[in-house]
Length: 80
Picture 1 (tube, one colour):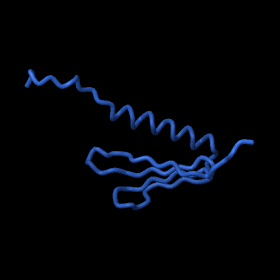
Picture 2 (tube, helix red, strand yellow):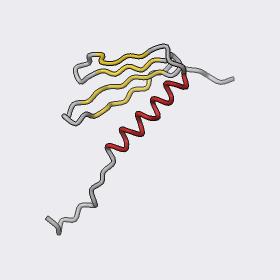
Picture 3 (tube, helix red, strand yellow):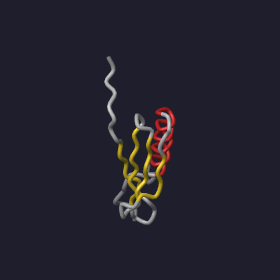
Picture 4 (cartoon, helix red, strand yellow):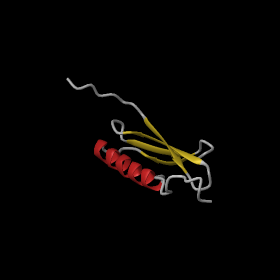
């Protein structure tokens, strides 16, 4: 028997201005909520299917990880 849990997933979403948003999702409940750096709810969607939430989570993670990959070469102390 498969165990189904209603566990919230939480991500920190760094912004260009140095602040961070908090993203909370729960595929089983069909909910995604985004909070600003002050904890104010700035986006909330509910009534989504489990598949819709999972697709949004996947896309969110692709975008965030792509934007935060380091493109700098390895540090070389001989080059200033």
